[in-house]
Picture 1 (cartoon, rainbow, N blue to C red):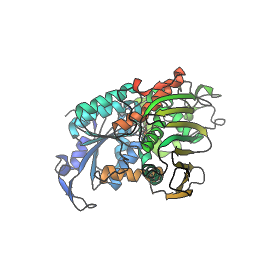
Picture 2 (picture 1 turned 180 degrees about the horizontal axis):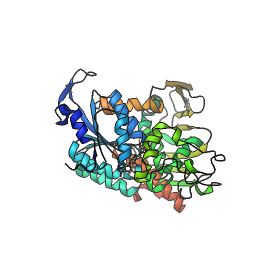
Picture 3 (picture 1 turned 45 degrees about the vertical axis):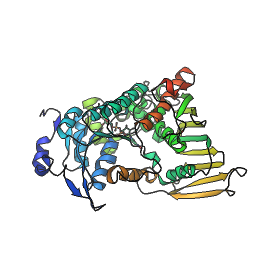
Picture 4 (picture 1 turned 135 degrees about the horizontal axis):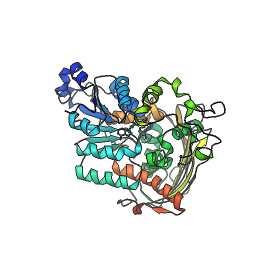
Length: 454
Ligand SMILES: NC(=O)c1ccc[n+]([C@@H]2O[C@H](COP(=O)([O-])OP(=O)(O)OC[C@H]3O[C@@H](n4cnc5c(N)ncnc54)[C@H](O)[C@@H]3O)[C@@H](O)[C@H]2O)c1
C-alpha cells in the first residue's frame, strides 16, 4: 500500500487490530434499536471542513455508532484532515487521496462534504469504487457536471442520496402533507421570499462561496435548498426561469480592502471585522493549515474578485402550470422567510424566522370558500424538533443512518434527479441574469420536466 497519502495508518492498525481485517466492520451485529440482526455499514467521508467534522463526523460517532461505522476520512489538506481525525475521535484512518482511501478501505458508502465544485468528482469516483453516495447539497454547481453525475449514476447503478435537510423540519413535513392531502387543491402559484442576515452573508463572502467557480453563486449554493423545497412541495419540475440579480455593498463595492481580517489596516472601521484567532475550532481547522492549500477562511469581504450576488429575484414556470415568485435578499438585519401557496381551493402561508427565535411555526390555512369543502380559516401550530435546522437534521440522519428502510410517505429522501432539478433552476437564473433572457431547463440538461413527479 502506498503510504504517501495516508496519515496514521500504522497507528490505526496498532490501536484497532481486531477491526483492521474488517472482521467486525463487515459482520452482522445485534441492532440495539431494532433488536434484529443487520449489517453495520462501513462509511468514509471526503471533505473535512466544518460541516464534515460535525454533522457527519462527531455526530455519527456520538449518535449512530450502533448502526454505522465511520472508518476513514479524506481531505486534500493534510493538516486539516489530521486535525479532523483528532476532533472526530475514534480509530479513523485519514487520507489526502480519495482513490487511495477507497481502494484501501473499501467503504460501503462515501459521504461527500467537500467544496461544491468538486462534489461531482467525488461522487463519480465513489461510484466507480462501488460505493453508494450520501452527498451534501448542492449536488453540483453547473449543468455539465450535473450531466456527468447523471451518466455515472446510470453507468455504475449505485444509490445516490442528496441531504436536503430542509425537507425534514416537522412543520415543513406538515405543509407537504396538507398539500398532498388536497387542502388547497391544485397549486397555481408559490411565493417564497428568503432573507439572509448581514452576518450570515458575511460568512459566505469571506470564503470560496464568494466565487461562482467554487459555489455556483448563492443561486446554487444556497437557493438549491429553496428550489428543492418548492419542487418537492408541489411535486413538479421547473421548465423555464427568468431572473435578475445584483451585488451590493460587498466585493468591489466596498469602501476599502485588506489582505484578510487578521492583517487588515481597517479593522476599526470595518463592520465585518472578525478575529478568527479567537475561535479555537476555526483556527485549528483553517488558519493553522492555510499554508498547505492557500484556503483563507477570513478573507476580505471587499476583495475585488467576488463575483456572486447579494440580491436575487426569479420567476420560475413549472411543468404543471404553477409559477414561483422567488427572492433571496441576502443582506438584511432579518433572517427568515415568507412562503405561501395559492391553490384552486385555498391558500397556505408560513412566515418563519425573526427574533426572538420561536420553538414552533404556524401554518395559516385560508379556504377558497366557493370551491373548498372547508369553510374556516385555521392556524396549525407545529413544534420544532430538537437538533439543527428546526429539528430536521436528526430526523434526516435517523433515516440515513439508523433506519434506511423507514417508510417515506412524504418522499423526503432526495436523489440525483431532485439534486439536478434544484441546482438547475439556480444555474438558469445565473444565465438569465447574464443574458437578460428567460432560460429553458430542457436546453441545459437531458431531463424532461414532469408535470407530476413520479
Ligand atoms: N445542508 C446544509 O445545511 C449544509 C450546511 C453547511 C454546509 N453544507 C455543505 O457541506 C459542504 C462543506 O461545507 P463546509 O462549510 O464544511 O466547507 P469547508 O470549506 O469548511 O470544507 C470543505 C472541505 O473540502 C475540502 N476540499 C476541497 N477540495 C477538495 C478535494 N479536491 N479533495 C478533497 N477535499 C477537498 C477542503 O479542503 C475543505 O476542508 C458544502 O458542499 C456545503 O454546501 C451543507
